[in-house]
Length: 160
Image 1 (cartoon, rainbow, N blue to C red):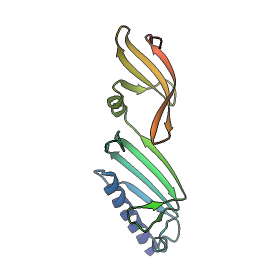
Image 2: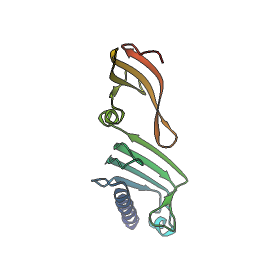
Image 3: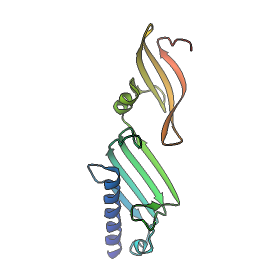
Image 4: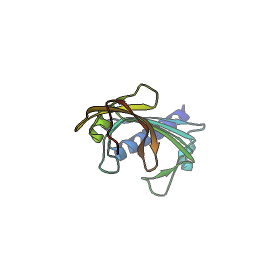
């Protein structure tokens, strides 16, 4: 019972810090794993923390697109001397962006592609009219999105 109270306190503090740092309207869901949870915060580290947050707003050039859903799994997060920082042995994260937000950022209509991992983008081009291209989407360094294997799906692209 006391161990679960300690885990709930660590979850609440983590959720509050995440919400403050990311500027979300709602607190994220946080789950602290590992036993005993009672001694983990006193040692300054936790076994595992999983965070799921929704509707993270854009924030200038550091975060130019709002994030619809973010899931983060951290193994061995440990607080540093600075209460605003923590480090983990490993982190795995998945961010979901809405098609509407990506469309607004790119200035073209973006939608789900016909194949897994691909998107379609439609734009009106001078001289040729509407053109739809398909591209494979992946994460790139520097928290960026990469578009690869671009193919014309409808209309004709002008040669470079």
